[in-house]
Length: 208
Image 1 (tube, rainbow, N blue to C red):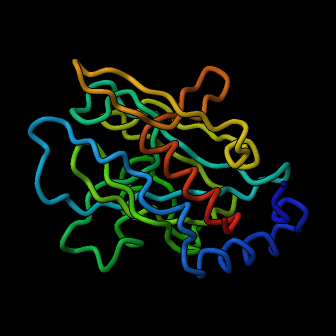
Image 2 (image 1 turned 180 degrees about the horizontal axis):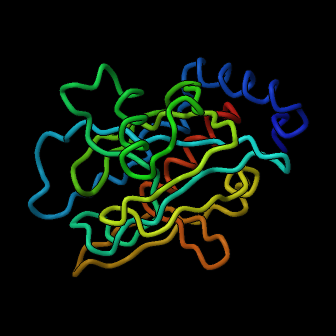
């Protein structure tokens, strides 16, 4: 079943998404973390936030994503949202997400309107991540920090929210089986935490 979101004009789309995010998350959008932690990352998780940037393009809403630098210690080379740990100076997770997006890709804060948050997701590296959904109005330019970001690109939201494009895969880490979600897009392989958070978004918007 298609979402009514895609039949609305852009201003109504933003309001519709905000209204959906203001509702309690459905059970299907909770506890999508696989519960697996990498060795040495056990214990109390570190609070983090990512920005889920929904870009208001004339041809339809897109989602801005980054490809992490291959030199980063955590999740090198993977596709992700701009984000990172919540610092003491951050007033809340929204401020943390906006700060990280500005630091990583120079996304102008004045072009982003925060619409709400999604259910938390715990990563294998020991972070408890709050996805913060932001509505981004062009025009804007991004300038990736090469130490953290190798590439910035956009994917149509309709593609990412289509359940037929969402897959469940697994990898063996020694004798441990790790199941994870994936949403391949052309040559881009969106998987792990980012794919799971996109599925949380889809299930939250769908309300079931």
